[in-house]
Length: 210
Ligand SMILES: C[S@@+](CC[C@H](N)C(=O)[O-])C[C@H]1O[C@@H](n2cnc3c(N)ncnc32)[C@H](O)[C@@H]1O
Ligand SMILES: Nc1nc2[nH]cc(C(=O)O)c2c(=O)[nH]1
Ligand code: SF4
Ligand SMILES: [Mg+2]
Image 1 (cartoon, helix red, strand yellow):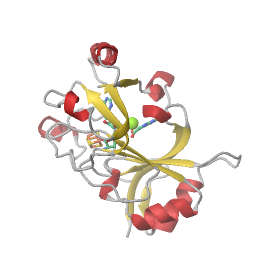
Image 2 (cartoon, helix red, strand yellow):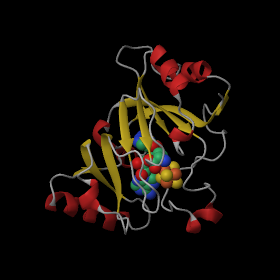
Image 3 (cartoon, helix red, strand yellow):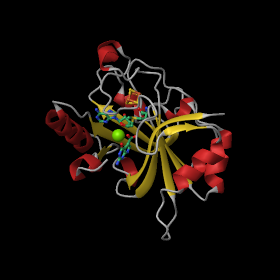
Image 4 (cartoon, helix red, strand yellow):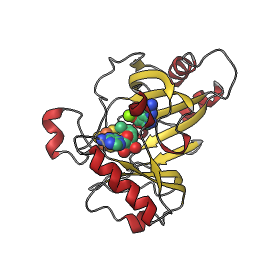
């Protein structure tokens, strides 16, 4: 199968339990909850997205004709020094494209595989770290994993039900945008009130990196 990739870049994981860990990011093009066009945002299912995932024109992006070619392009971004290489597959919605051959090809390159998904597509087996971030108005099909990362506030999402889902970690992340300061206070208060939740701060935005 061929893969449409917006960009591939090396940075620090900015979110979740692995925040601060160096990783190669592979951002797949396209999403099932928004077209990515500003004109469509107001009527999209997911309306708060902070990411450009349209097209294959970013740094290191392109159409990759095979799993091996994409895995090699990802591995090429890892520095020559030692350490366990990590790739974060994101998007857009990566699980519209990630399949067993790609997982096997990334593992064959020695990469540990993390995925950021909206949970509307069931994850294939073999992912080493699965982060699910549910979106109100969509059906949550992937209901287990390593971390559940809920962007707040999302009116209509039942946090009491979500915190009971079988994930090892339950995190809230303040919705970025004009009201981010308000959302951060709300997310902080939520964790203090119910310590089953942990706060995920978008470290890369604080640092001014991608
Ligand atoms: C751009 S999404 C791509 C992966 C997948 N489509 C998803 O939604 O999980 C990566 C992460 O950024 C989060 N995110 C997107 N827009 C955000 C915003 N405005 N503020 C905070 N987090 C946001 C998502 O919830 C998700 O956890
Ligand atoms: N540094 C950094 N960390 C991230 N963690 C999740 C991201 C994403 O867009 O999926 C992201 C991102 O875009 N940049
Ligand atoms: S589901 Fe993820 S990629 Fe798609 S629009 Fe929402 S935050 Fe963006
Ligand atoms: Mg991002």
